[in-house]
Image 1 (cartoon, rainbow, N blue to C red):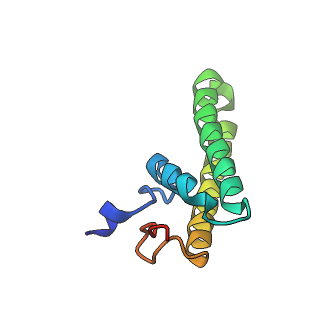
Image 2 (image 1 turned 90 degrees about the vertical axis):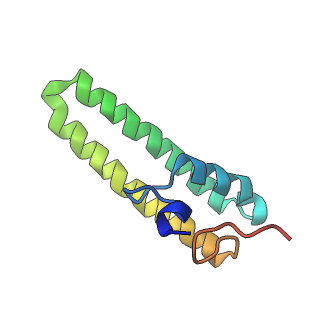
Length: 104
């Protein structure tokens, strides 16, 4: 299986919607809510990215500002996506090749 077929990240380094759902389905493997909270933040950032796309179209005079906000959100999303994956690895429910381990 190639990396692309097994990747939880898209080509931009952000978690895919499917990956978010898989991680959400397994986030309760930990007693603490840290994975769930990170997922919530990532979903909010995804919504914000879509919102800034609308702002870019609606407010052409502020296009530069909204593009900057969007790219800042993308960078935050990438950071949190990699943080969540590393947390999943550290907690033992994600393998080094990005597959979720079966529950015991």
